[in-house]
Image (cartoon, rainbow, N blue to C red; front, side):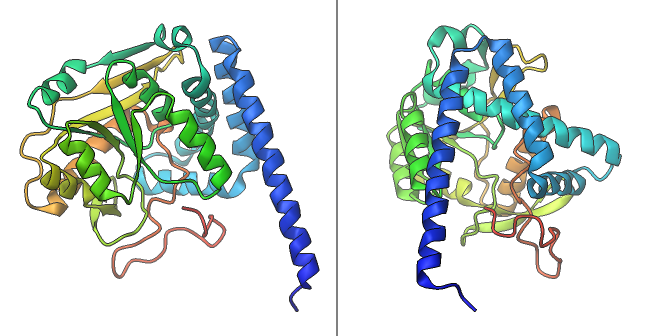
Length: 318
C-alpha cells in the first residue's frame, strides 16, 4: 500500500529541509577552506575523500568496476589503490573548486603554470574559434580559473539536477568564465565558436542522445557523442587538446595545451571519435587517479553485450 498523501508530503518536506541544510554546510566548508594554507587545504580535501571512499559504497563499486574494465591488466590490489587515490583526488577537487570560485589570485597563480599557451595563441591567430577538447578530470574547475587569467574562455556544461546547487555552480563559474553554454545548446556553441571564441568542451560522458557511436575507449567500446565533429564542421573552429592536472607532489597545477589537430574532422565520425578517445587515454594514463571514474561511463552497451554494472551500482546515476 502507498503511504497517505500527508505522509508523502511530510517525507518530501524532510528531504527538502535536509537538502538545504546539506548544501549550506557544504558551502560553509568550501568557503572556510579558502582561508587555509595550501598544504592544509589539500590535506583536508584528501581526508574528506578518504571518508567518501569508506562511506560511499555504491560509488566505490562503480569506480572499481570502471578501473577493472579499462585496466584489466592491472592486479586487483593496484586497482584498489587507484580507487582510494581517486577518492582522495575527489576530496581535493572540492577544495580546488572552492579556490576557483572564491580564492584570491596570489593563492592560485603562484602555484599554477600554463604549458603550451603558444599552441592556443597560434590556433586563434587564424581568425577562427577554438574548441578546447578535454575530459572530466578532478582539477578541471581550477584549470578553468587558471586558463581564464590569460584567455577569455567559455565552457559547455550540463545543468545540475538540484536547481539550488546549479545556481551556486553557475555563479561560481561566471566569476572567471566569459559565459556558460548548456551542453544541449549546440546552436549557441556554434555561434560562439564562429565569433572567434574559445570553448571548453568535454564529450567524454555518456548522456545518451542521437549523435553517438560505440567507439573504442581503453579495453571497451563506449557510447560516445559525435557532436565534436559536427561542431567543428558547422563552425570552422580548430580543436586544441587541453588538460589540467594536479602535480604529483600536490604543490600546484599544470594546464597543458597541445597543437591544434590537423585534418579534423575527417568525415568519418567513428574514426574522429576514436582519435579523440586516444588523446584522452593518453591524458588519463599519466593521471589515472585524477580522472572522474565515479561516472558510469559504460552504462549503455553495444548491441549484444550485457550490462557491466550491477543493480547496486547507482542505476539512477548520470
